[in-house]
Length: 521
DNA sequence: CAACGAATAT
DNA sequence: CATATTCGTT
Image (cartoon, rainbow, N blue to C red):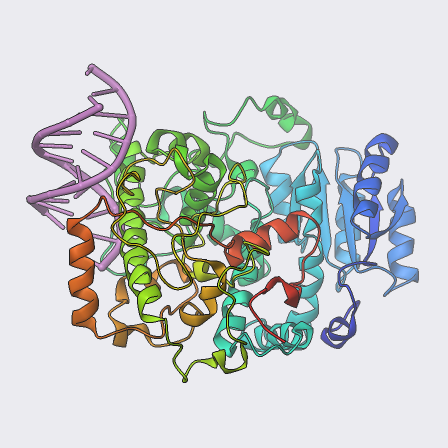
């Protein structure tokens, strides 16, 4: 095979240096793609006709890690031969023609992904994932083993600062696995990855109708992701797609799939001419991620249902749905903040049981790096701070303590005009974080945190050191009675999720260990 | 009136 | 429980 799991393990700076075979008749487009790829430090071999590509693949097996092949009306047949010829090489098809059946055919024939042109950086950036997938799915079953190996990879990258625990790594992996830069069109990778070849039929069709309302059986497919925008969505939402006219060239019949981007569970409605999308919205992780992304994009201050709705571009979803979801999240956030609040008070004296043993005594004011705390927010990948917020923080009171009732600051449940953020983003000096907020894998149940963890594959576990429940409870209640009590202001360290997103946007796909600023030598 | 957030209902 | 629906405000 082209690239084995072992290769990957030893690969420094993966995916830099990944060798990409590029076939594009249009030299303009080829050049463009090439330069983008090269910016990401992929190594590109381009060719302009299929024969060349074919011989490159056949004669120098192992020379490429991944191929990007353009499909068009003219090379239609040859390209499929190419597809067939390269078993181990992950092949990404690309085209400027939006033709569903062609896409399907490509995928069915083994292409790992179909990217519609133009190929943005975002689309190209993650092509390495296919290499990984191929490599691991060839060695072992794609399931656990591969993840295990990945974990090992991560661990090896980790610079042994003792910070992350197994579970944390796991959640990294989860993050990585779940993390597709939104707005790009590449999420299909995951689906493909999960279900491997040929399963598109089930994958796609179910979007239409398969979802009968035999709910309650939670067996119901989670895979009704609302993701596959550009591939299939020709709904009203998307900007005009003139490409449709090209269909004929490819001999496609009328569009088989119509209401793609819609929420699942609409099976019921269909019959009635009107859209009676009354079915419950299932907030799948994917859907939720869209939501999250929308919120992030808007910035917490402006994340209101209608705007979120616009951004999510999910057909069938209503403002109410969003509002409801938002509310739920919001509440969750509030609750946590309050708890965390309390934790700051309780954390004056570091518990010995914590892995903070090797942390040195904390400085009262870590004026350095507001962001250095480890992800308190691991639990809240949701609310990324917006960058319009200056990095200097108002810390209330000395370390570990804040003057609690402090009049004159706005209520935390109104929209923040100042720094404080409505969502109650973490507000303590970053250096505190390690004391109480590691995503420890405490089984959340013992801490009454059940609401939080189970959803959306978020990293689990929160506050290791909780005072007795009733105490917390009491204080929480008190806090609720005094909404005017200000929260300390501060910055939230970016969530692992957003960090990873950002990194991947910058072409860094592995997680540098140093992002965890909390470790201490 | 529409959209919001909170409260309440399912 | 997760979502939907209702309610009072803006």
